[in-house]
Image (tube, rainbow, N blue to C red; front, side):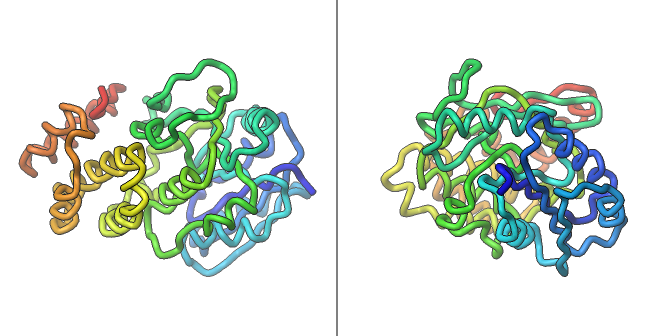
Length: 311
């Protein structure tokens, strides 16, 4: 049994998959298998994977059914002690698995292990992820997970590890969601038990890929995701804060790009005391001003400057 099963869902990533796969194969910790589940790619992604010869690499194909089902099916086919996720357009630093294993060794009882990461926002702009808690150099258990993750998500779909048993206990990825499946998974892990974090940056998250599912709208799905936790947030002030920040983000998106009913419903349920002054200001702006500010933000990103509601 390998220590890690590396899970890579694949759909039309011919420009990325070779470098992604090489970053996995080049790990300093080598006790792993790699399961790539192709979700009906129509480009040369499968040919590229097939050209890479390694006995630990397994390629499975299915008709296009979405990223959630691809991840679920790949995890079910895995045999490793721990699952390590990797998206087909992200990059691991050589010590990524080694650093995850350090966290696992230090805290064997937690339900989710998270590595630190950097974010590629444009070809010429990469920023470190920013989290809402203090840490130094050593692995630690996050005291308040939902409070910690209101700026950038502490877990990402290429930075985490967990056991198959815990994954199955929370029901895996929700295949009904067209977007936000990973956010839903993190919430379920956060409600299940403790989460550990390794502060060393060992992964590059490619936010710049315009074809990524995370860049599509599907604001209705984000609405249903947030509202499935209404009962849980009643007794959990940190979860309420986390969901209000998400209500703000999705409300702003749907106010700008539609559908309007999503914005109306989310902003009605939003406790604005959980937002900072800049976020409250943005909510009051008319649609044309929000679109102008979004275009200006993207202009600054191309110039190597990133501004958010937290800066």
